[in-house]
Length: 131
Image (tube, rainbow, N blue to C red; front, side, top):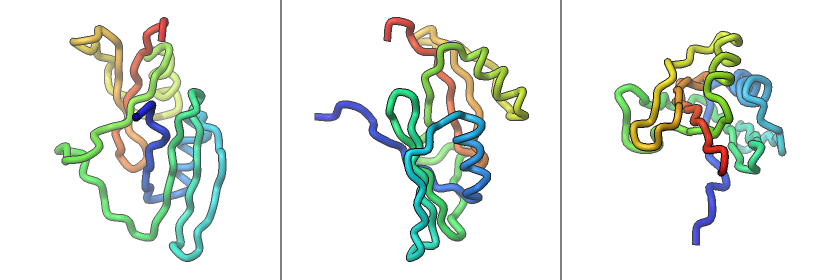
């Protein structure tokens, strides 16, 4: 049956700004970039190092996504990292606000939250070395 998550799709309000964020800042690899004239929309396929993907879409005048208070639906995207401290320090050096590092009460793993340019909550989650 289900083996893994293939991709997560994100709709952004400013395509170029979000493309810079996910490609230049977070380092995701561009697989394909397409403009769909019939929708006046870009679709950017991005690859993570583990072959997971993010599809970044632009649409004219998308509605805001309620994040705070949290709404029903996708809560956040979490990324495995070797060191939450190193990635947090890098993101902060690039001018991003990153929440303080916390410890997951169940797994005892470090994690911290930050947001993409449209306020989508993103999480850094320290991976288990043996994974």
